[in-house]
Image 1: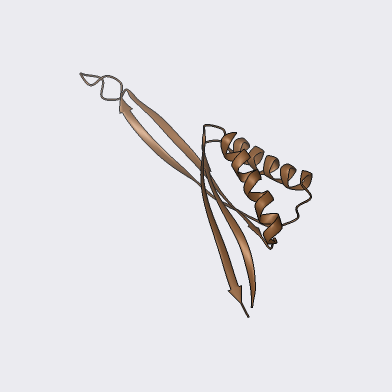
Image 2: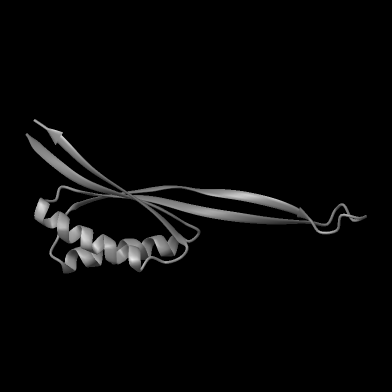
Length: 116
């Protein structure tokens, strides 16, 4: 029976550049430590929330201000690495979590699939 290890990264941010920098940092650290896991990338559609505020609630009903909040999501999966590589990858992930930018929300999930 064989097993496939995988680590899923779910990133949410209000900037596309921070998500791209996260992926560049992750791939640089993997190459620096001689690790070659299979990487899958899914970029999810952006979500836009619009808020409308009334500037002057007294007489001027036409004085509205619109604000919007954009959020970008990406999903990265690292697959097919050995148990020895798993220890190195966990160290890299711990380093990345400690140095994570403040505007990125990161969710991690680890899986181990077994097949015959």
